[in-house]
Image (tube, rainbow over all chains, first blue to last red):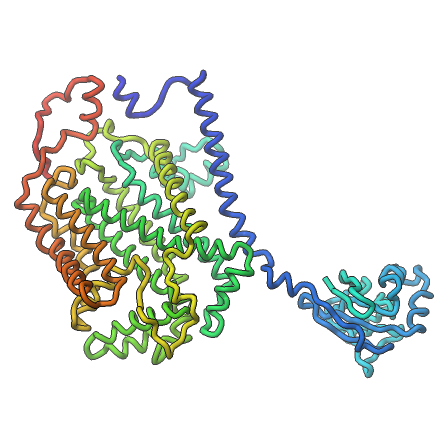
Length: 189
Length: 423
């Protein structure tokens, strides 16, 4: 009955040109819908990525001129404490002289500073053990046996290159990405 | 295992789930094979559009809320930060503000469809009432949402509307203090409006669910306003109306996109780009366009309490429309006289909208009173009287008879042309 066929909307062409036309249309419609959903979903999800004001604060410039030899400052970069120490010539020598086989986390001092700017050591201020902030930047602070930093929580000690020499910490203090904008100014991040 | 439902799903994992929680079977029944009148026009797509738009508003709203700060000192700036610094923040904000206008446009057309085709008549009275509840919830949500950017219009619109409740005798000003959380619109008000603005859309989802359930119990109305008599009068919802609604959704998105990308501030009021100043009232305090007709009705009457009662009355009268209209015929297609009054009603609503946008001076006062008078006349006098007095056109025998007759095939035996169908 034409009326029934019309009402139920089915055709008996399971194969042949009508069926492949329908498959093609379904494919194109499905693809279009998927593109549409993606086009709507992406801005929603990307709005959760750091916004431009957060990204702008993600890079800071630090003026190194006020930091005298032998002393250090702590700055905040991306919410994390960052140690900047102006090393004396003796401290640089001591850092270079250490044998790599003695280190818990072997790394040469030259890999941890920028060429031509070896007097500046710029490291993360977060102990690699359980995350406390080691002391050693202020003149009155204890610096541990290796002249670098000393973590009061569980006794980890770092040398003048920020490498772990003693204690439960498994790794050296992390090096954050930075560049020298001029001899007395760095940009971190 | 006696009480378990027997699932027809082929895939064994899905069958296991469906036996215990028959969501797949339910969706197949309610949106797959569901018998739907075959003669829908595109006015029947607006319910689906409304559901899609509700989801768009909730999605954009949730992501906006990740960056918005509901404090009087920071709200305005947080919205500007969204516009300037948040990735696609401008898109989220414009999609949400223009989306609200689109949502109301869709819902108003959906309501006018109901009024024209008699979709509120028995047995769909409760379906209609649930719809009016949804409209009320939408108005409350939109009002509170508009306050959140904390611009001049946000602040003063909130002041005007919350002050309305002081018209209530005896307890009015205590109610206002309770609503405000203080002595004027201030931080407590903004905070609670943010909380409720986030909450109400989910209440709307609940009522929409009931609205769709009620619809599926009675079945849909159709442009002819006559009941479905045989399965030949219907089509399975999928693929016919899934595809037709998809076309509707695409057409809607084109209109929506035109506003969002090419005229995003079309519906905006310039005063809302000025941070709220409690010491300076703007020259004209106006709500967004979709609230203007009610605003006009509020100001039509010179009495404060009278205006408030009329405004709430304008919504209250919608609840009882199923009982106000006495016509035995559903669709205005067969009600030649009623169609003119329906057109007049649309004109009255548009005029009231324009009145709401202007100061209550000069010609606008008269137009506001005429519009309000006709609005109530239409529901309280014309609908009851016309049903009794009007002579409707003869109704067709069934939905499919005009279609099948053209293609051939005999009339169903024993069916003489019936001029009127008792509803």
